[in-house]
Structures are given as structure tokens and as C-alpha cells.
Amino acid sequence: MNNNENEVKFLPLGSIVTVDNARETLMIISRFAETEMDGERGYFDYAAVRSSLGLIKADEIYFFNRENVEEAKFVGYIDAREQLFQDNAEDFSKNITLPHLKLENSQESDTFGF
Image 1 (cartoon, rainbow, N blue to C red):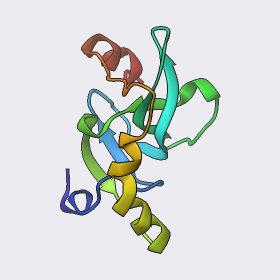
Image 2 (cartoon, one colour):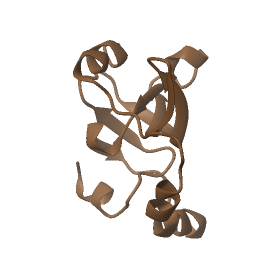
Image 3 (tube, rainbow, N blue to C red):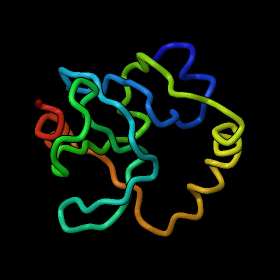
């Protein structure tokens, strides 16, 4: 990851990233995104869409965690509200009652094989 990403705990909305096994960049549209995987309801750190197209269909939202981000190509806008979020993100995440879902190796290639 580049140096700008290291300054924030969670990348801001609008950040453009490369993710494990992806051939395209993704734009982050949500944090602590709730979803269902293999019949289990939980959350991922991020939800994103292809940066070249945006959201075309609801089934083209990609979920991943901080450890799946290879590089932040662009870090989204940071203002006072975003800084407040950054200051409280870790505490907020500890209060989420849903399980923190992880990508499995086999699912990564399916999920990011676009």
C-alpha cells in the first residue's frame, strides 16, 4: 500500500484500490458492509464497485477486508467528519455484533476474477 493509506485506519469512501487477485481497480462505496456469505450473515471492512463503471447491477458489489488491499491508488476525501470517523472506527468495529467475514482463497479468485 502507498504511504497515504498508512495515514488512515480505514480508507475513506471514494478511495481507489487494487485488491488480491483483481485485474481491475475498485472504488470503495461502503465500510463495515453487511452481507451474507455461505449462508452466514456478517460484515466485511469494505464494499466496492469497479472504478471504471461504478454500480451497474447490485450483484456487482465486491466485499473485502483491509488485509486484501494490495495498494491504495487514490485515497478518498478526508474532512473533519471523516477524521472523526477515523478517530472512532476501531471502537465502532468492536461493537459490531455480526461476525467479521473473511475471504477464502477459493472465493477470492471467484469474487475478483472480473
